Length: 100
Image (tube, rainbow, N blue to C red; front, side, top):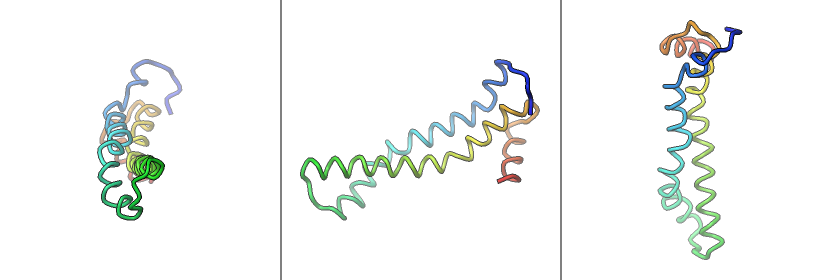
């Protein structure tokens, strides 16, 4: 582990960070409405304001939890690149595949 602090280490792995953020923040807002319509609206056919709100936020929260798990690998690769100055993008991926 590199114990020196520098701005270049801070931004290492930013490609992995972009992928992680795109998955963890983008997927819930892209798919939560479709998940609500396809699953929750069919399971709970009520359309009163409380039911609609619960279905909306339940779908968004469910998608958010799944997308957080899906993005964890990219987060691990970014952290590896920030803590090991010699790792390349492919090296970080190889190391994470071996460890996890």
